[in-house]
Image 1 (cartoon, rainbow, N blue to C red):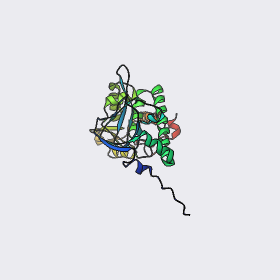
Image 2 (image 1 turned 180 degrees about the vertical axis):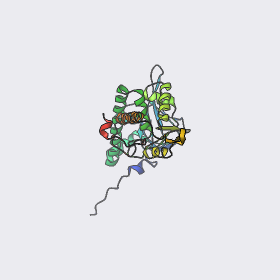
Image 3 (image 1 turned 30 degrees about the vertical axis):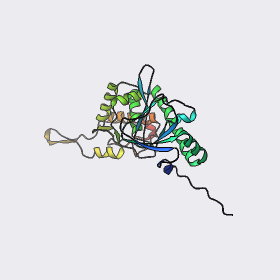
Image 4 (image 1 turned 45 degrees about the vertical axis):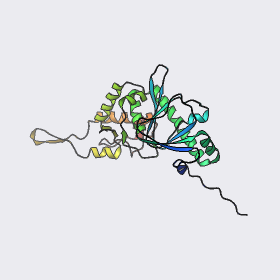
Length: 279
């Protein structure tokens, strides 16, 4: 008797096509996917785009608790007995989202080990992120919290390549995410821009290692008396080490290793050893 082979399961294909208990919808920028207090009866998967998760207190104060992008789930609290939504999810750009009915995702979790493994990895990653956010909020300064948030928004340290263009995220949104005022965010963003870490051209842009090296290829020359020309490309040593120290602190705040030489900022001098970052 011929043995009937069990068909292989493809998680990517499952999350890309409409099927039993699965539907796909396109959202315009600013549309609400679900609101705080709605019934929790489905899990959502971002196929393309970006959404923000906000919570409103009884006093009417709103806080941004997360920004989620492509290949991320949200609304999974319904699987743990959360009958009502505790947050509001709004799109930040044109976004394509799959809706998975609770019964459909429970079934595939039980029947398909590959999907279960992927979904558990997502849940563990989300738990680690929430714990890191709590530690960051309790112990780090607002400057370090902002630096960490910018790195996270650029996917820095993830398996996928970093995204230099963060997008049109307002300073008010950043302030709500790190728990400070808009004026403080403006001050630190201007500081980061002066140091060459970020730039603004309609959207916030972050410079990583190779991109920063390109910024320093053309020396800035200043003419002095007697025809002497001085290369002012490099900053003074004290400022160099100050910048490097802040960057190491930012990486430590996010939990990234400090010996990753591919994406660290290049400031025109050899980078210190990892031990020097930890001092």
